Image 1 (cartoon, rainbow, N blue to C red):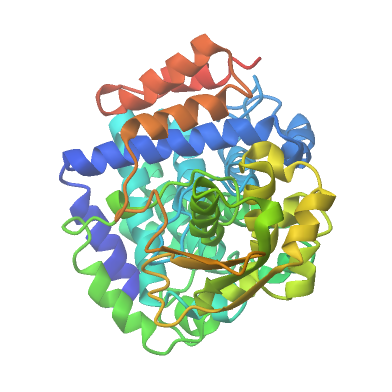
Image 2: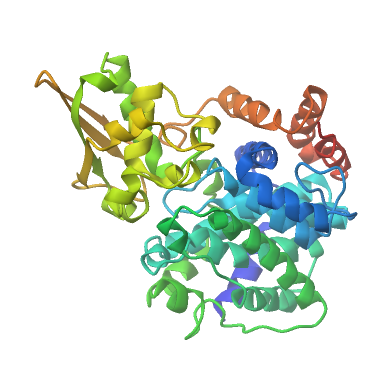
Length: 457
């Protein structure tokens, strides 16, 4: 049996049982978190390209577009919303698979769920199972995709979104398999954006969600795709990951779909920048709590897991002086320096270039590989600060806050949602969105959520 057929059958079997309570809770919170981030992006400078694009395409349709009162087609809404959710680098991550799941899966499931009049339970279940597929793609070859310059979220997300859309469109087994194959021809998303910190990275999950929805619609209309889309000579794992053994690892992971749930282990972000940077921000904050001020610093050494260096450290001279505020979202020296100089990292941090004081401190920071790092299972960090007095302060971080090893309180997740949503919605609408998402399991449709999301400022 091909992997695509085995995957579709496993998902169909899992769909026969309701979501476990802990999985349903995780799904609601991750969906709400993604919606909040998307709403914040819609009224942020980095979201301007999507706002302008939406004015041309959001001229009526069943699917909500964040920050707009008018809707669009499911495919267009998925593209815009997926891009907005990822624009601020504030969306969630499953660390072991290095997948930003909700940017793709929330965008696809919300758009198709609205267009199809799906029940809240059906939307939430499709969201949870879509996450599980994307995570398993990444776990099968966690370093394979990025080592070849592809973002796992973008490439694998296209196929996962196709399955989400197939689920909500109620496609047949053969149509769902075709949708996977069709989506493979649309999968893309490379790391070249790192050369100048360009905003196209946000398009990766948006295009994945869009491509997956289009693939499912084409499959419903009769288009076919290769059934060997996963294990074939030019399939997902050989072509994009260059990993001959990944297909068999994935086959083993498919066997426990519906039994083992990885979504509850996905990590939330509490800073709007690359997730690899978060433990270093925390470490810099601990230095501040110990009384270390920017002017006290002689030099700082950051010990970085080797798998992260290509994103947040290289080339170091460019990371010390990024061209834009947005580019600093992937700059280790700038975020560490900012935390020490300005005392915080928030949305405003990346809306303008770093200050002269921040750049001056960044020039006193260097990095080296962290020995025995457990990346990607954990996002670790270590900072060694040598003060001008000659004294040394060392701060290790065992894993990023917000991951399953250090889970956040529900109140922190909800506070983040409300602060983000306030950029686009009135207080009453924020309350309505929160109630609608929390009540999805009992909702006959997602109309209440759709209406609340369109009550923009």
